[in-house]
Image 1 (cartoon, rainbow, N blue to C red):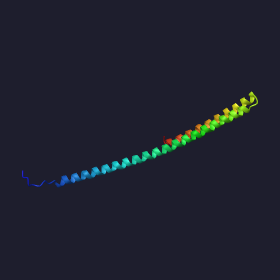
Image 2 (cartoon, helix red, strand yellow):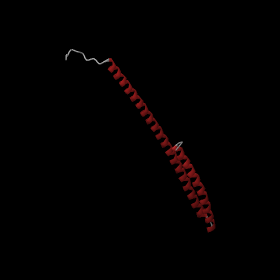
Image 3 (cartoon, one colour):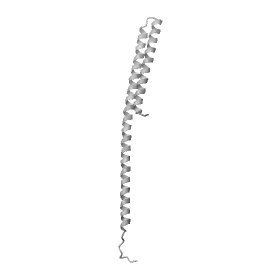
Image 4 (cartoon, rainbow, N blue to C red):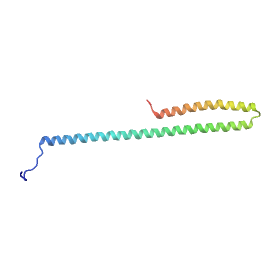
Length: 121
């Protein structure tokens, strides 16, 4: 073995190595692109979900405020009632209106939650 002989990589091996490196870089770039797209999609979905959850929460609070106001309104009317018959009539009207209101509120919250879930879910 002569120590003066320079080490040479055959052309075919060099070409193969260069091609392998180029393919590995291309695969890595593709992977990074896919990872960036996945992160962007996750961020977008998180923002949508957060916005939807806030909207549903605000609607639920509005409905609760309306229901509480209706209860106080009934209490004031009951205090002014002249007899038991008026109390029963006021209560029946209240129950009827609350059943209707709660039905509408449930539909509203269900629709809002459905929008949050998105199409196809």
